[in-house]
Image (cartoon, rainbow, N blue to C red; front, top):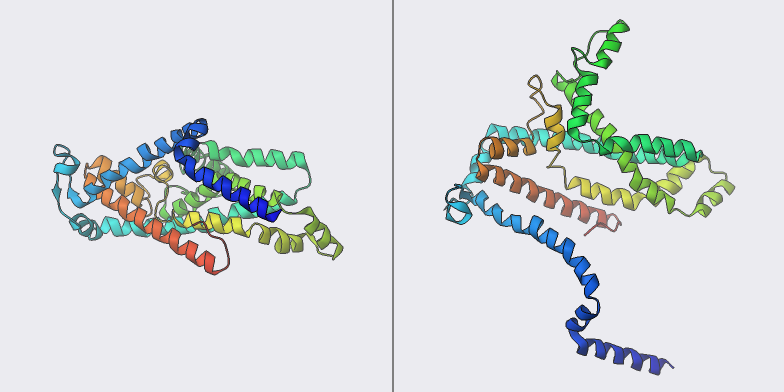
Length: 318
């Protein structure tokens, strides 16, 4: 019987080898057509634009084009590394993104653990809906709402504080307060959406583990710490690696929607610098060089974090 099965397997493998890729392309052309659409999108909008990275090494002039502009090598990078604005942008980008990683990454985990312990299905669904809504608002709308609520002159929050006998607080008109407000608004915007992934991971935990823990006398918090958290650890590590890759990026829309002339200490970041040098000043070579530097650092951080995760026993993403 085993010999017959082995012979049949070898025969099928030989047939597949003789048929070749054209046979499968003809047989499953509908599936390949479906794959071709997203593949074409990735090639056209993700890979073809990478040819424009060459202007980071050229003194790019629009009239001369990509290939006609003068080649200057790493001179553009030397120029931007020597500029104080670049050093300031790197510092602010790292500061904002590291703080954002500490608060905006951990809050969805805490929120998901809390919602997972709620027994009322209606209460849980209502809270999930309210918490998810901010994610679907653009930063232009969020910025307008923030200034309506937190403005020192006519903000609703400051009006309430003044009515209660307190002094008005410059939430968005002073650098330190702006930083705190920036982080708080980011947490409010992202924590509801982030819980979806963690709640989905928690839904796959075997209920028998909780039942066994109950029999052993474990309380609610002991179950969370010894069952729930270890069960979603792989998801946490994967998302952490992906977020580390964005630590040199930041959100241009978020900064631009919340910035103002009174707060300039933390609002110069790498995406803002790319916008100023590229769109406002027309220095596309310098803006491309900054963007390329940012992307290279992001790739290095992702690879490093993945290697560290694998050494600690996790699967990683690469």
